[in-house]
Image (cartoon, rainbow, N blue to C red; front, side, top):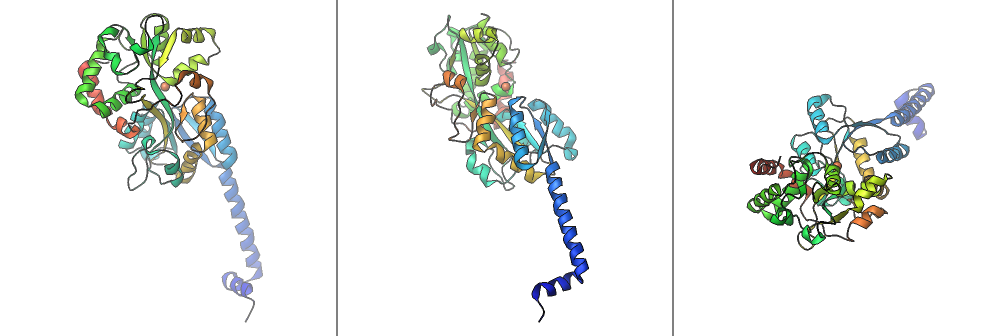
Length: 362
Ligand code: FE
């Protein structure tokens, strides 16, 4: 009986010359695979326009050889683009900054659900979509609180320490807030609808509209500045806009914050409303494995800390420590968080928009 390897090689390849050729071919393919890997590109559609995210993507490229090609737009723009591009879309990964938009993208079939034990173990269920047979459509990677800012000369924290108090007659003509149709407000009210029901929530909305100091306009930062300028005495804002002003190197931004008190509402009751920034794999991605790997990378402790801190947010992965002095100064230690899942508040968006229309919250 001949030597086994020779016999196998002989049967498969016929001659030593062909064997050498096959080895060379295999080596060539292996090196081609390595260079293909080195050149692999993930197309990222991102609504997070934070320069700090760039360093995060560079780290991912260093670790994996996969380059990130980023296209920036806002949430609505990204969803519209994905719909238009359809199956020709080059998108691999999508990052959005609101639960209502993530739920919209899922409902419109724009995401490719994935199965990742790593992500399911790392991201708590309230910060990801409910899995179906295909997998999980989206995951939240950071959280932001929707808080109340007030003029310290005109009001006390106890005047505005719950969302419910925003409808109190005492605050008539006091409130500045961005459009009722903005996803941040749709998600805030979607969560209230989930915990208080439609009648109470609509009555509350009528009270808020009656208390507006002006027709809604601008973003959250504009409302904060309007409080500092005396145009209103209460503003509703995401926490990171306040932290951004606190950390600004412009003296006039810090002067705005000197005039303002910040309340994390509902600490004695239902907890402060939290929204998420999150990600998904694009429905028509041709790089599902690499896109999944990228989302898994965002859930690693170091990426979590960096991703959240880059925009003054909190990580969704439990136990990740943040060293953000502005957030520490602004938020009560271990503040109570509203227990409504991002999926549930996002799913209420349509009903909330109808309520907004009925009460005239433009
Ligand atoms: Fe924002």
